[in-house]
Length: 241
Image (cartoon, rainbow, N blue to C red):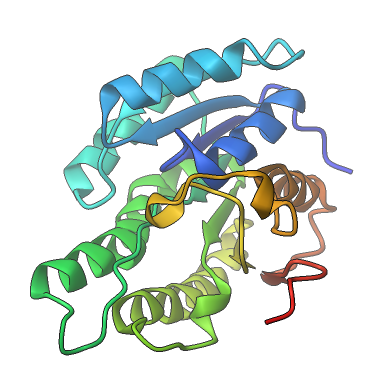
């Protein structure tokens, strides 16, 4: 298995939820982690919490960045390179959801969803690809089972995640000859703060954020010759309806 000590990871939307869980898991493996959030205070507070909660010598850094802006993503990547001089792992995790019937979905909600969940990932890979070429690194997107399974009131979210799943697989084919690995993880129900949900004891049946963190560690430690390019993840035993 690949050693991760002293590698450097950038995680978009890493101040809470899945991104935070991935940051925790990578820090335990000795990876220096930079997490981004649209809000500077959220990023820095999360980094402080991460630094107090792991046992390795790696550090977490929180910076403000908005995936909806190419310039903001470029600045975030430059901040990583200025501090650590390398970038080995990129987790394109930032995402949101607006759920409404097509009659009620607003144009603002549509653009917010697509600009964050899909265009934001395009900006992230465009900003990081040269650094990943240098490190022969790993680019991972966090899609969703909603990227293959459509549902009512999900037109914007489904469109963004269907697009992200296909986008990631095409990017994988583009970059594999540069020794860059590219994968997409497609979780089902996860116990997070997504869509204003407050995680609680009723979420015990769901995938936990540390489970996704463990999966990311397994991916990036895998032998370079092997690439799981698309991974679907489901709760083992969801409640019956």
